[in-house]
Image (cartoon, rainbow, N blue to C red; front, side):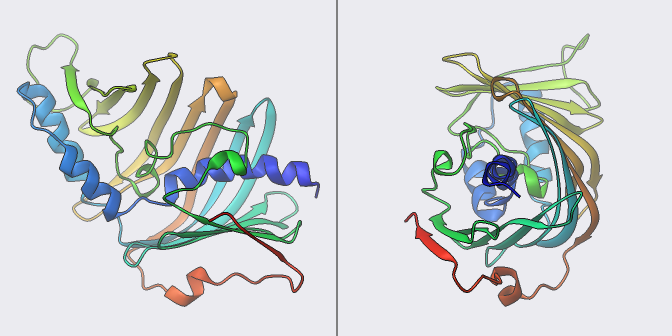
Length: 278
């Protein structure tokens, strides 16, 4: 397996990691603290619904996954598995080649510490989730803060936002959220539009106010009940990066007992090179 292919795969993993690495209560609480109750009744109803759904993220889960798509014109296909624990924060993601089943990369988060292991190159990177610079690993620009909560089923909200408007075709007031309905938020850097269908968010669009760059996320196959909010399929479209990725979760097990020590353990080669980025 070539080094170039490994780093191309890592671009996918970075995107995957953006959904995964800080998805739990810490970031949810921050978002909720910023949630305002706008004067617009329609928008207030939509914001309230997001808060309700964000409180249903699973405490633990394990799943297999498949990632397919195009990044910068190149087709990619990866498989793997992940195990996740909310508190204390522990995450492990193993990526393998979908065809040859060979290991490609392992990513582990242990609270703020992030370990990124390339077994083919025998390199282990140590980084911090709060200061990690994606450009050190892959030539791709995606805002980590925006995508924090998606992987665990939470709906991310842009930082320090204000409510611009809520729209529903052919209706002056939203008495029941059925859809399509659109909540539009803004801050100094972004517009964020969240689409609702049958009371559930199904699309999110971020637009950079300075350069009009767009990132789109499509949320499909929601699993929603009193305890869990999770999406079976997430599709990411980043036109500037010529990036279209579909992430499918399989054999998902929610709120299961997990072995904390097993999550953070990585089986390393004896002559592995350790590179500290912190």
